Image (cartoon, rainbow, N blue to C red; front, side, top):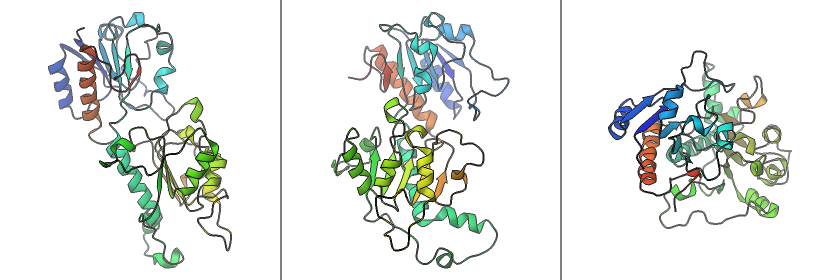
Length: 341
C-alpha cells in the first residue's frame, strides 16, 4: 500500500509543517479551511477542497469532511482520515461516514492524546483561579478602584489544593498521563454504571473533572441527582463535552446559597461552589445566559486544548499512523477500521 497524496484541509501552524509533509508525500494539497463560526457554518467565501483533490487523496488531515463528500465513490483512493480533534461525533453523523460499507478498509482516527498537557494545565489553572477567586478579583480591579479583598469577601477566602480530592469522570488519556510512574493515581475507581457508586464518587470529591465525550449514554451524566451528591463547596470542571452536564441543573447549583448554620461542604443539596466550563450545552450559549455573569464560574470558549504545539502534535500523529497503516498495523485512536492492537 502506497500513500502518495495527502489532502490537508485545515490551517497548519507553524508554516514549516507543510514543508515536513511535502517531504513525506509526493503530492500535498493544502486547503486551509478557517475555524467555523459559532453557528457551525464556515465564513462566506470559504474555499473548499475540489472534487479532484478529494478524489486523488490517499490520506486526509482535517477537522471536517469536505462538505461535498457524501459517498466513498468520490474518494476511491482514501484509506486514512486523520481528524485533528478528540471528539468525532461531527464525523460519524455525516452521510459519508454512515454510507461506508462495513468491510471498507478506510480508517478514521481521532487526535485523542495531543491535548493532554494543555488541558491538564487548564484544569489546574482554572481550579486554582476559583479557589483563589482570581477571576472575581480581576473583575473588581478592572473597575479601576482598589479594594480590600478580605473585607469584600467576608474574611479569609483563599482555598488551597492541599488535602483536596480530585475525581476524574471518564479517564481517557488523562489518567495515563498524570506523570504517576508508580501507578498510585487514582487511589480508587468507581463504576459509572452504578448509581450508588457514582453518588459515592461525587460525595468524596472536592473537584470533579468531567472528560466524557458526547454520546447517547453520556447525555446529562451529571444532572441534578449527581450535583446534589456533591459537596456544597465542590468545583466542577468540564473539558469533555457540554451535553454531558445538565446546564439547567448546574446553573441552579451555582446560584444556590448556603443556608445559615449549614456546613458549606454539606452534601444532599443542589449547591456547588464553582465551575470551570470550557464546553457548554448549547454551545455557544445564548446571549444573556446566566452562566456568562456568575462570579463563581470561569467560562472559556472551547479552547483548553489549543496549545501552540497543537498542529505539531497532530502532524506527528498523522505521520505515525501513515507508517503504521502502510506496515499493515492499525492506527492509533481509530474509531473506524483497524486500530492499534
